[in-house]
Length: 413
Image 1 (spheres, rainbow, N blue to C red):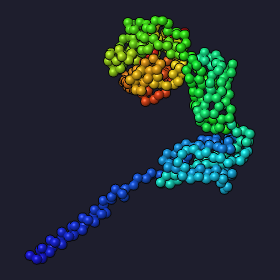
Image 2 (image 1 turned 90 degrees about the horizontal axis):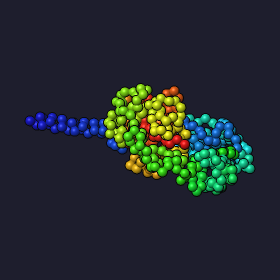
Image 3 (image 1 turned 45 degrees about the horizontal axis):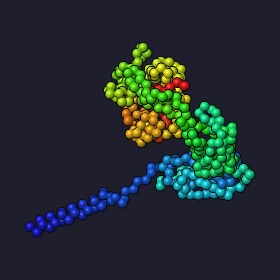
Image 4 (image 1 turned 180 degrees about the horizontal axis):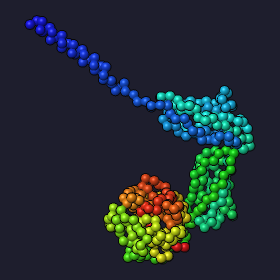
């Protein structure tokens, strides 16, 4: 009996020791688990100063594209292409830009960048050369001409930049010039009472001159919509809205006989329409969806009446461009209140009606709105205006004519 008890006790102790060892070896703690990149980052690509550029500022800005997987960068500037004589080297840079001062005038320099993460350091980028400017070439000049939407010169337009430099006003022929601008990114603003404000984003580089022509759209111009606020077409009433110098329908066209989304509209002498998800009530709310040929009544000239009422036409690409200028390229002002963050400041009242895909399926109700223009882009594509719920800019693009998009009509001049 004593021997049996001893044997049992020995086996229990052995089992406990084995289990303890197994847990220690096979069960790493959370603190032992680390995640590292699989490889060093990609080689950076240089942007500015451009290779072999001249007239670069003595206080230059160096910029390169982001390298995938990079945690930091090293910038080297040398007086020779082998960097045997480095005049500047900075490790651990977290941004993609570096402002450099103290360069010599009319001197050739070389620069390159590499990228680093926890797995290592990439090779250096290509080596680019640049030559600094004479100290007398110390600033950028921008100039241009401001006109109205009809191309007539506008005098007395206030022109200024953000960040601020100088403020100037256009002369009697609409011309302006701003001097003493340093290298960098700016927004150029144009303002005049009675006109929509306008701005563009630019990037300028030392030792260069730039020309930017700007267009302002008149606010409260003589209405082209007339005194009657609505029209009736195809048994439906459409409201009118004046935007800049244009008169638009406030609702999408809804005319024709509904056909199934799986069928193609054809040139059969009868207007056909798609209703989202093949439900007629969606046409009541959002208007019909039309192939480009059906929308233009199978005409191939920009500005055609198409399926619009008499005296109206399918917008041209230029019509859409003027609309975008009148709204400062802000899609929120075109979207109806409740359509994402739409403000409808223009009264255009766009609903995000979705579209019919070429295969016959419907997509993106309450997410996208796409309006056909009558301007053909290619044999298979036509220009459109697009609005998206998460994007405050207006998309002026081109899409396949086999898509089913919305149609909004604009009044003839």
